[in-house]
Image (cartoon, rainbow, N blue to C red):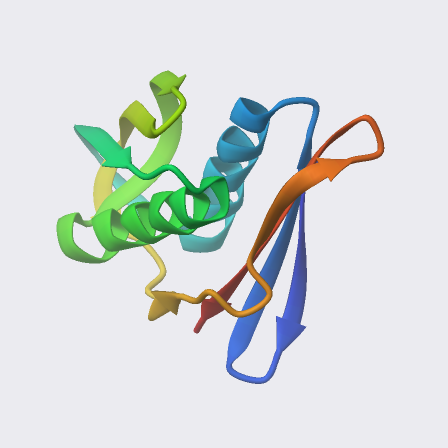
Length: 131
């Protein structure tokens, strides 16, 4: 599994592992899908996402925060990435899912213990969510 949840009081930490930087962002998507999965409807939603930032750890925090925001505000139950591009200072994605009732667990993505680094021949990231 490309992610692992670690529970804390009032927080939920996710550790992500992948062979590449892009793989970490995709693992983050999988983690958020797991966290906010809920009852979907037949109505399909497709949402473009574009975020910029030169610091990878902060860009990861923004990415997970945006996915949680879309679940909360648009009722997006995310299911797949139709497309995903990671440039030097930008994430661009097309997120697909269903309209519905995702679990509303994430209040905010924090910078506490935030990391994004090379590890064991691949990449590892850590993000703490306020729940």
